[in-house]
Length: 216
Image (cartoon, rainbow, N blue to C red; front, side, top):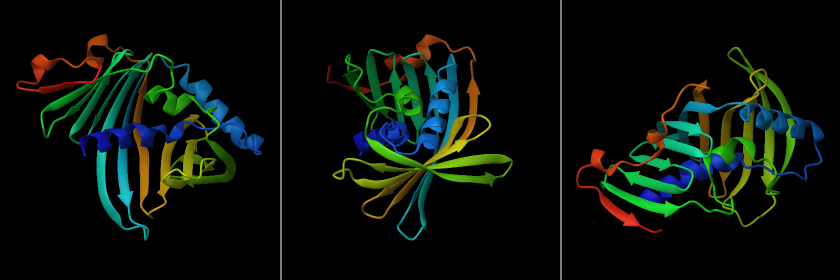
């Protein structure tokens, strides 16, 4: 379960690794603008809400989390899980079991990182179209409908919502083949604030009795 939650956090956020190959140039312009905007930030701290619904839209659970990013470094705090990475090593800590799993970041750059969630739109994994715009509160939201090219994936549709003015991701909804729906909504974002490098490294002295599972 611990590994599943961690995978959902990164892969759910990583639904934002999008593809070229779309026949909709307007959708590509929107994605390119989001990627370009994100690359101007030296650091990002974002709060998000994660909601799970059944096929009828009934809410099953709602959790909140925070992500910090600086260069290739990141930290994610989500429910009972914390994920740290200094760009070379990743630590996935489960508070409920007091266990941390240590892995090495893929040096080829093929692994999932939060930075890719916001910038890597060219993995040839999706086709996408721009559905249009709508107003959510004071925001003008552009919605992009995304369909995976690999039909063996466990989801069949993703709806990405973009804040048109800010050129940042507002929310991502994933429609699973089994009927469940997973929505990640950005609730707050701070950019270019000072961040110490040590927040991206797991310090076992702060977690007395932690069990280490070293997979490096």
